[in-house]
Length: 103
View 1 (tube, rainbow, N blue to C red):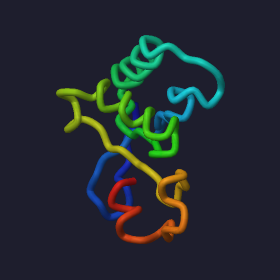
View 2 (view 1 turned 180 degrees about the vertical axis):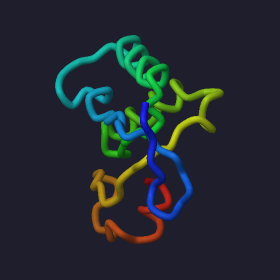
View 3 (view 1 turned 45 degrees about the vertical axis):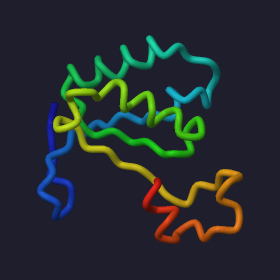
């Protein structure tokens, strides 16, 4: 796997990242065991840049990643997004500090 420095952060990330929307069931049902196996395979191949969002499965995708990365958190870089709109956030600015802090 090839790696690049992410901007001015000093973080070295794989040039191939793993998107996790599929693991939250956005494209149909998926077994957790299949998701965990795919994530583990990506890590074994050197992928360390993971893209997720708290909107994927209303947070389920991030819970799954938490299970996959137990004891490995120092080996990965996670990118996430903000400005999702769950029903309990209606009326809150999508870019307000409380929303960003939980994203």
